[in-house]
Length: 221
Image (cartoon, rainbow, N blue to C red):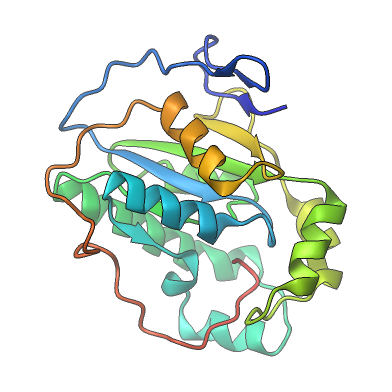
């Protein structure tokens, strides 16, 4: 079951009813950032890319914000600690602030496995709404086994699942089962979230963060 866990009680997504409209009035100048979260193999990049294309909003990958020290650790197969992640999370939060300062809502991918990580991202200016992509262990393992260009092997998926803290009732977000097609997931995200109109069309990706590294294979993807 796909569930919206936002504090507002009238937001619940079920296979039978679809996505209940967000009752929060849309305010054109108030940014609403969407963080596409979940463990490796959940399809964050695919969904976030489609979402950014559909809404013409700035989009960035979590991979782009890692300092070189994190890249070196992950390239050597060493998991990151919380201390390693705080600068990475703050960099993402600051990027969301930059987009908000330009009057934009943004889309970003981030594993955001812990409540405390999400707490930090929520300090960005504007509303920060999380979209948790989840699926069966078998499906996630299959995806990780058959994908290429990623550092983290499927054997490390259990550790991410063990670390994962699902969205709580006091968090602004929605949980979606990735067994559905990506296009359908995007439809559900948009149906459950009142987004302000973009001030400038972003189809050309003009406001997207420019990656500084081209061969990163981190565990956070």
